[in-house]
Structure formats: structure tokens, C-alpha cells
Image 1 (cartoon, rainbow, N blue to C red):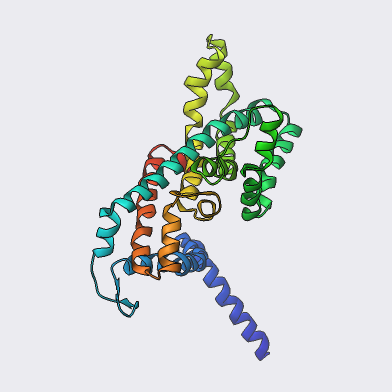
Image 2 (tube, helix red, strand yellow):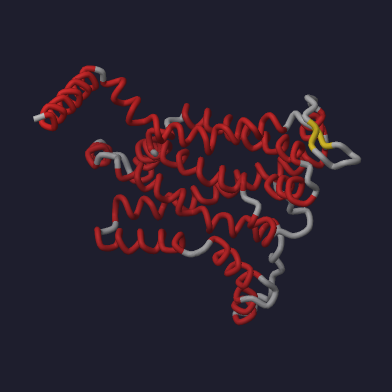
Length: 302
């Protein structure tokens, strides 16, 4: 009897709690989202806050230890030094070039997949696009090293057709090619999604009104697909901006990027505050980029 009474009381408490949560959807959502939000806070927001704070500390020149002395010397060094400005502009320029390249390459493929290809062809193309992502990032980079090296497959093929060898290995051109290849799937999928969402009736209405293919593409397809292109550009731009592996393996002299310098200051020189200050640059750049992307409706296509 005592056990039955306790069970009934527990069920009664459970019913009352469920009823209270049902009447308060905000409390229900809070309890549901609290664990993942807390985890996100601990593994992302807190380290980022520590990074921002570290940028205002300094390293003792004699002991090489971090001193918790507030100053803005690291910020002045990053934004006032010509070498850092050059590296920043080089990194942003490469990220923008890769983004434009991937957009140009992705759009016709995504359009064919979304508006022309059969289901079987779509599936085959999706497999071809996503299959490289299953391979190791380093394996793909090293594969390109073998292709672009002086005695690699590219120069062998050019020699076979009589065009002679080209020396693009370990240059910014090689980095542009490798970056464009590696991040292309991240542009293709959002563009494909935005193109697939365009109602067929819009294209039919344009044709009924006498609009030719190029006019329909310019006035209907491109504006409606723009949020998808911008959404894909968030990935390609951000991933290129923060990468340091490809510049290290593919780049040559004068190919330092922001990621390489941060790694060098942090891992080799041990100047964590200066590395943290330089890490503020891509954060600021991406904050501005995301604000522009939001204004262009990119988040609706994600």
C-alpha cells in the first residue's frame, strides 16, 4: 500500500509538471535548449572571450612569460605594421578570389542539377560532389601537390600535347586552384538548394511573356538564386580566411596568410597575445561579411 501511494504521488507530480510546462512553452523551450546552449557557451563563447582578453596582455621580453598587464600594443602592432597589413590583404584577396571562382563554377552545375538533370543523374552528381569530402583534407592537398609539382601529372600532360611545363607549384596560383577545388562543394549545395526552390511557374510565366532564356536567367533566376550564392560564399570565404594548412603545404615564398602567422606566433614564437590580437582580424572581417550576407538574405537559403 505504501509503495502504491508513493507511485501515485510521483505520477501526480509528473502530471502537474507536464501541465505546467504545457502552459508555458517558453519554459519548455528553455529546458530543451539549455544543455546544448550551455555546451556551446563552454566550448565556443568562453574560449573566444579568453582569446579577446589575451590580446590585451603582453609577453615579458626576458622571461618570455605572459604578463597580465593591460595594454593595446598588440592591437597597434597588428593594425599599424605594414607587413601585417600586407598579409591581411593577401588573405582577404585570396578568400574573395576563391569565393568568386567557386560561384562561377558552381552555378552552371547547380542549375543543371536543379532544373535539367533527371533524378538518377542528380544522384550521381551528388555522389561525385560529396565523395571527395569523405577523404582526408591532407590527402586531397597532397594529391594536388603531386599534380602541380614540376614533374607531376599536369606537366606530363602538357608535355604530351607540346605545350611545355608550367611552374605553378608552391605559388599563390597553386593555392587558388587548391582552395577552389576543396571548398567547391560548400558553394554548390547552397546554390543548388536556392535554384531548386524557384517555382517552375515563374520560368513558365517568363516564357509565356516572351522572355528569352538569357533574359529569364538575368531577371528571374539570378536574383532568386543570389541568397544561395551568398550563403555558399560564407563558407568559402570563411574557410579560406582561416586556413593555414594549404598555405603551409602549397604556398611558397611570400605566401604567408593570417592563419600561418597566428600559428607561427602561437606555436613557434610563443607570443600568444600577439597571435590573439591578429586573430581579431578575421573575426572582424567575418562579422562585417556576415552582416552584409544577412542583408542580402543569405541566411534564408541555409
